[in-house]
Length: 326
Image 1 (spheres, helix red, strand yellow):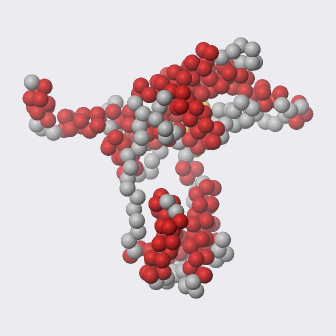
Image 2: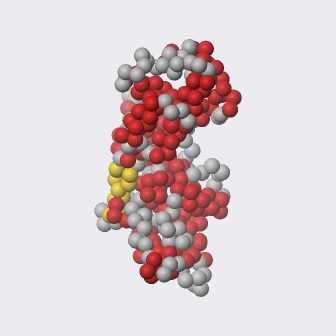
Image 3: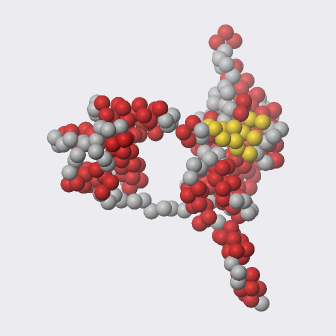
C-alpha cells in the first residue's frame, strides 16, 4: 500500500471521525491502490490528467463489479476532498469526470405472513427439542426465536444485533440501546412478542449456553461472562457470521426466497411501519438514518402507504374511490 504522507493523514481523519474498522480498512485499500497506480505512471496525484483518470476507471471496471467500482471511487473522491480541505491539493480532479452510477434498487421486503413462517420454524424446533441433551436444543430454539423477534421489532442492522449487550436492554420499558454506524447510539423499541421471546431466552436459554462455556474451562481459567445478549452453542458471543448462518437455516426451512438476510428484516420493519401509518420521520429515527432521503426509499416499496396518502390528501381521491367501487 502507498506510504504517501497524505494517505496517512487521511486515514487519521477517518479514525478521528470514529468510522468503523471495516470502513477504514476498505478506504485504505482503495486509496492506497489508486495512489500506487498513479505513482507507477509517474503522475502527481494532486493534478492527474483526465486521460489518466479515465484509464484508471477503465482498469477498475474490468476487474471489479459495478458496486465495488462505486465504493472505490467514493473512497478516492473522499480522499481528494480531504486533501483539498487541508490545503494539500487544489481540488477534486474527479469532480468534472462522469463516473458510473449504480441503479437504485428497491430493498427486498417480507410479508408479515413470511415473518411468521420464520418464527414458526423456531417454534417447531422448540417443540421438537429432545430432553436428553442438557437443554441445548431448547436453548438454541429460544435464542433463534428471540433473534428474529428482536431484529424485526427494532429494525436492527446485523452488526447492531450481534453487538447488543445485556446492559443496554430494558425489558420493562421495551428498549434496547445499540451502537450503529459511526459509533452512534440509538434506542430500539421492542414490542410485546419480542420482550416475551427475550425474557424466555434470558431465563431458560442463555444460562444453558453460558454453562457450556464455563464447562469447557477449568474454574481457575474462567473468563468474564460475555456482555452480548446472544450466545452461540459454545457459550461465546454469537458474531455476525453466526447470525447470518442461523437466519439462513431458518429461511431455508421456512421456504422463503434465496437472498433473505438479516437486513431484509430491517427493510421489512420499516416498510410495515409505513404501511401501518407511521410518519416517515419517526421511521427515520427508529432506523438511525442521518438523512430522510435514505428512509424515503421505503415509500417506493409500500404501496399501501402511497395509496393511503393519496386518498387522504388529494381533493378528488375519495370521490374517485367511491366511483370505482360502484
